Amino acid sequence: MSSSSRPLTTRELRAWLGFVRAGHLLDHELERQIKRDGDISHAEYEVLVHLDWAQDHRLRMAELASRVAISKSRLTYQVTQLERAGLVVRTSCPTDGRAVWAQLTDAGAALLARVRPGHREAVRENFIDLLTPEELDVLADAMSRVVARLSPTLAGLLPAADDKPGGRE
Amino acid sequence: MSSSSRPLTTRELRAWLGFVRAGHLLDHELERQIKRDGDISHAEYEVLVHLDWAQDHRLRMAELASRVAISKSRLTYQVTQLERAGLVVRTSCPTDGRAVWAQLTDAGAALLARVRPGHREAVRENFIDLLTPEELDVLADAMSRVVARLSPTLAGLLPAADDKPGGRE
DNA sequence: CAGAGGTCGTTGAAATCTGAACAACAGGAG
DNA sequence: CTCCTGTTGTTCAGATTTCAACGACCTCTG
Image 1 (cartoon, helix red, strand yellow):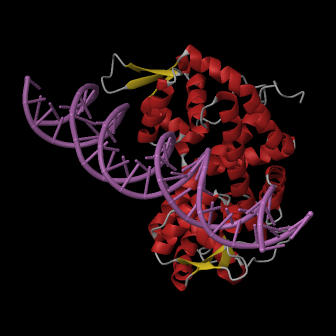
Image 2 (cartoon, protein in one colour):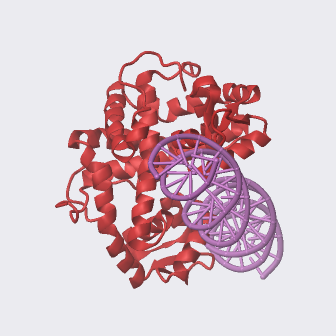
Image 3 (cartoon, helix red, strand yellow):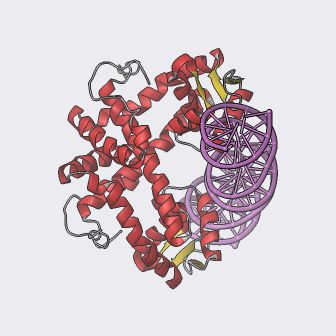
């Protein structure tokens, strides 16, 4: 790579640092909001959301870990916590003895319903509403390239580029 | 807020999810690269970088924590680790008995010099080079608004919007 | 059927992180 | 000087995360 030793220009640095900092700050803010509205961690919330999105509100552990982008052992811990709180149950799979289903419970769905509005609002206030529609598109395109490079698998799960009022999130 | 219950459109969702996923994946990738080249964590690397950027390669704990955007107690832990590795030293401040300076050592600077090229390359390959200059500018502007909203203090430290070959990072 | 090789989810120990409580100090008002 | 209030960095306990095994199971081959 011929560019390997060339330092980042101010333009590049500005984009990179801004991206990283915005990510950290948003993480922190959402952590706060989710803890406040639902008394669970952001990580746990993510697990619930992905279960909610899934067919029949359930997923195998490995698939869930992949979608939430966390390690298997971390997910084991999270699901144990969520199960303890009654938001999720583990079920064994009849066709594959190794597999474990994580299934969203009614209580889990109810919690999601309670937390989501505030979450949406937080995402809007601190991110979406600060960008123009054009910027959103530019960002989405650029990010999809980044995701595609680092994880072709996950890239396939991102929504396509049309604009109907999505039924998710 | 009138928008509080309106779900995210596909366009918005695409931008938001892409942003979050790209952030996670980049974090993971950089973690790997830094561990490989310098045998330290990404968090520790960030501390070293901010010290290097600072006047005289040193900062007070509180200021450092603020710039790296981590908690005081977390920084205490990180600096202890870095000190144990000889990459940083703690110094007491003559004018303020409460203050503690974290000072980059020569070994710390040397480590940075060893890790940075690979880091730069990773950032370029997986981020910068995937975006056009126009996209970089759009992104930087948008992110600066997000940062400004969530942390006016940090926003002031972001580089300005000109484009000379920056001497940092 | 037996065995090899791979996948799945869990476990345990160590590393790291969070949040509240704390002790030492600074700065100003009385 | 003395008290009061706010700041600074650390500490401790508990929560979370990582990483390297591990046991159970599946699949394919012979």
